[in-house]
Length: 373
Image (cartoon, rainbow, N blue to C red; front, side, top):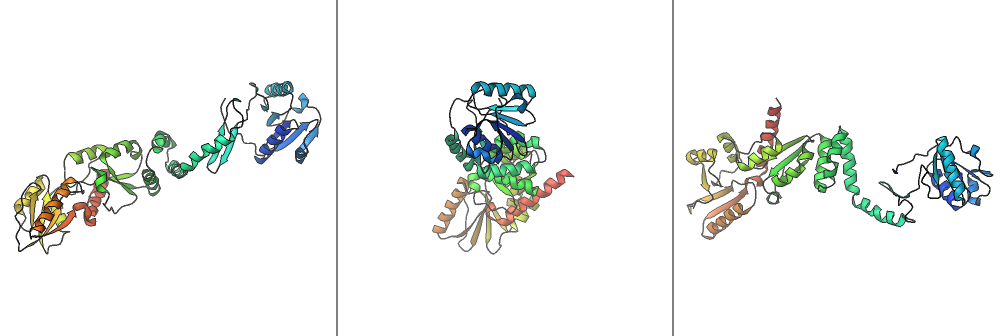
């Protein structure tokens, strides 16, 4: 059998019987808006609050009702009522375990989010306490279910929701909130990072947004593919990491620095009162150009020994996007130089600076717009 919700509002319901079972059913069905009528030779005093007829039930009485419930203390009579209703095409239930009944009662518990129902197929009595316990699970998922409802309503194609709903039950709440807000605002921004644990201090300028690692974003790809998302790579320049990000986004993402003009724009952000010293990891083409041609800025590989002048003050920019192990190594060098009497200021990594993030955001938003043209 299949458990369904039966809408009894403004429907005629006949209850055959006048005892406790009949009373429980009369209360239940009337609360659902049914027009309840009782037929029985004798009835409890409380049943006189409903319309009733004091008589023995006859086959001719079993008509013109949406639903009939056999609640007598006579098992054979109840079964006879079921058989007659079958022939007349009337929905029928029975107080006895009757395989021929078209409707069987189930235990249910009303919760603010819906109704929990359980049928033990008459194997176990009184399941209400267990259903109350089960309702605590709904309490735990209340916020998630609220978001899921809003996501379903926002997705124009309901088949899309069916495709991802299982995944939506698994994602973290902050991801679910981002999905909801992206659909509401018709735009979201995913900042891709190599290791998201190293990117926790990055302050982005666009909303709704989330910073996510390459490893994590792969698991969300089926969901993100349905969303109006702009990806922004938190990378300095081209390389293997950017290539992996491009595979995830199915488009070409723009790193912070692609050419000499990009480099000049980045360097223009930093003050020029002191000597600028940039520390980088890999001899990229545009950085090699800077090493050879820049008079205002010094560029050094992380592995190089730097010769400082005691008469100058230096501002060190780490051409990195996170505070990981490479940055800790640079920090250690700066501390050592200062302990030896040099004046060296640490300006942090590139992503510590709001203007740097803005450059990345602008490049990738414009890039996406150009790709559409």
